[in-house]
Image 1: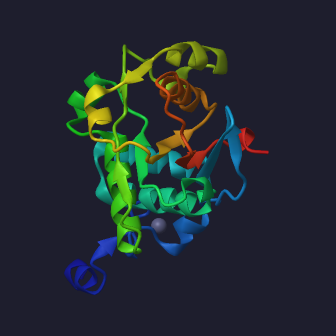
Image 2 (image 1 turned 30 degrees about the horizontal axis):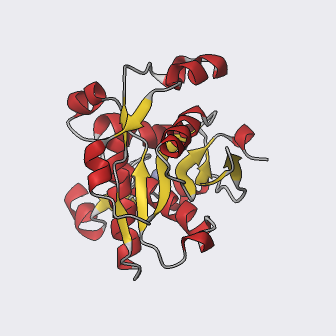
Image 3 (image 1 turned 180 degrees about the vertical axis):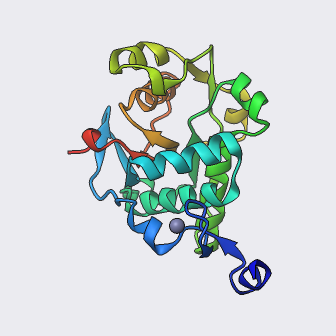
Amino acid sequence: MSTILELLFPSRCVICDDPGIQLCTLCRSNITPSFTKAEINCVELRAGALYGDLVSQLILMAKEENIAAARNVLVDLLVDAYVKLDRRDAGNQEIFLVPIPSSQSANRKRGYRHSYLLAQGVRERIRRSGNAQIEIAELLKVNRKISDMSTLTREQRASNVNQAYSINPRGRAGQAEGGALILLDDLVTTGSSMMEAIRCLRAAKMWPLGAISAGVSPHLIS
Ligand SMILES: [Zn+2]
């Protein structure tokens, strides 16, 4: 029976395992889209969805378990965010997605760079839709050990990421002068990582145009 189902429905819902599509209609309906913009240090942030149990589950699956179907759903949400972002100031410049990095040790442990893979998904999706002027620039790197943010209070998060990033020379070498930078992360909760990323880029005389995330904490947007 399962073979017939798999022939009829080649993929399954990543959350409830129902045959059909990678995220079934019922599970998809439990994700609340985010239509409001937030501002982080004068940089517009757009998100695909409000943070909730399902978004949290998808992030864990993509980030820690490398589940492609979960990553694809996060990419969908990031593309939604990208579409909503005001990109008029970019003009005809090439767009560079700037992933918010994980620590080197987390990348080594996982064997992949989570936010880079998300950026890759977004780039491919946008290129397919006809906009070829989009690249990835890994401009940021983590300076030191950052604790797992999920266990920290708002104040702890802020000091946890204070001066945490610096410019990654290799990423900078690959980025053409004059491109428009869009920061990218899976989730923005208090905005402290995003704030630190903006600070770091500005200190190097780079002015991000906007930021996108798959999920955003409901209390960050008004
Ligand atoms: Zn489902």
